[in-house]
Image (cartoon, rainbow, N blue to C red; front, side):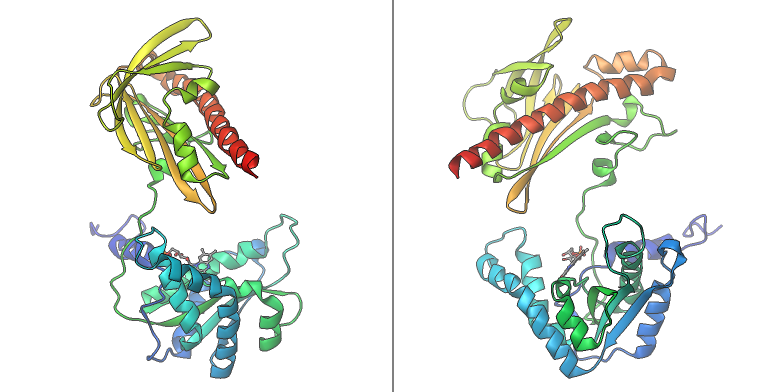
Length: 393
Ligand SMILES: Cc1cc2nc3c(=O)[nH]c(=O)nc-3n(C[C@H](O)[C@H](O)[C@H](O)COP(=O)(O)O)c2cc1C
């Protein structure tokens, strides 16, 4: 067998390149080059291979070529997109993490009607919130396949949904009957160059949970069960209404978890002075009065308003790694509290490894306890910071 081919015969390098580099293209759309109907038919035929609820053939594709119609859609798109133009004014040159996407989205707002073809993916049906599959569920898989098909043929687009805020205007302009929902209007063009890069995304080990919500694995397991060797972990997340600054003030206090956790009792700084990477503190723990222990903790990441990580006992062979991460989420903050159980220097690893047939179960039970405590902590942080906002109002 050719080493470059997968078991199913695909050239994985090419497939992976397609899957990882199909980007939202806006500034690199080539408005000067025509896109043939032939190419569009080819891409729609490929997209139609996507699954559809009940195997209903109810998707429809509307291709707008007429310049006056494109101009009118462009005006509607811009009415919704003014927020991007305003945001660009605020963010340009600031280095803000959203500066690039806002500038790119604003460019599309200004140039939407220049695309050689605007392609609307629509479906027969109105969303009735019934929970039954059929509408968005059947259109979205094919819309994404359409993106992939375009990319494979040197074309590009952005998954533009802002016209969804103007459904009746779009329907009237294009003669769309009642009972049809339009989901996305792709500005399609050849791309300027083909060298797109993979995006930075969270790795699977961060966001794939095994058997219980929030149970992570640093490494893939050899047989599907959890092992100490694979770095089993726990994540608890919560969205707060507060800005990262307010959340940081709470999570950067090493005594805060003791307010909410049933296991963590309190902490004292060992090192003096300003806190940063390398600072040490002693953490005191207790399980319902049965067992009490202390751990020496070392700060291994300290990025104000973003990240606070500490390791237990030994920086290189930690008993556990604990981490708070803060990310802006709309006007508020998503707080992520995570931990990974270490291979040694803790009580869990020897207990789990005593009997390999019970390793998975021991880790499951221990993580249920961690999860409950961590959940209490993130809920506690939320109540502290959100109460403060409410008190200010
Ligand atoms: C549901 C959905 C709606 C989107 N709506 C728009 C839109 O109205 N306008 C736009 O320019 N991009 C839109 N996008 C594209 C995203 O902004 C884009 O995927 C994001 O910037 C990440 O870029 P990447 O896909 O290149 O990684 C949308 C994407 C999705 C999945």
